[in-house]
Amino acid sequence: MIRAEIREEFRTSFGRTDAGGNPPPVTIHTWLERFNKQKPYSFEKATAPVYAENWISHMEKIFDVMGCEDAFKTRLAVYKFEGNALAWWKAYKQAKGGDAWLIMVTWADFKKLFFLQFFPRAEQERLKREYHSIRQTSTETSTEFMQRFLRLALHPCYYW
Image (cartoon, rainbow, N blue to C red):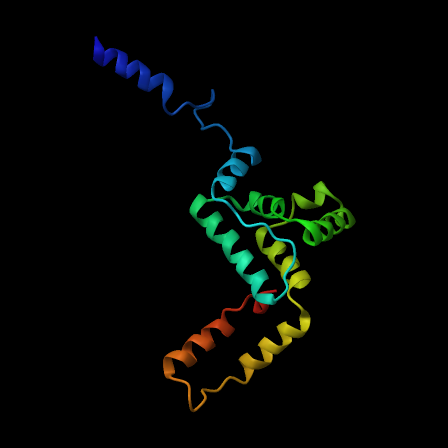
């Protein structure tokens, strides 16, 4: 008797599916709830380029741990915009066509736009020059040189 009740409870409570046998669709609201549980940082402006880099890294860390689908990443990230960043995003989105345009924006597209806005061109160029002329200094250990090289080689400005 108890086994039958347990089986029935398992059948009706776990693994609920729609009529086609597929799991229910995950919506932006589901992702937003999961996202907020991770306590994502807000973003208003970047007083230094490293702040823009760190914020994107923070978002990607959250998206990775959540297993977030690419289609939701941009909307979740801009949900955390405040002040200047939010004003820029609203104006940019409107100029591009609003929500119809937003549906087409991938996470890679968003990062490119974000870095172009919040990572000054002069700093991008400085990092590129440093990368192309990198040499180990006489006071730098090979480990320190390798760390500096990797920081420059993996910098996001090379991917936009």
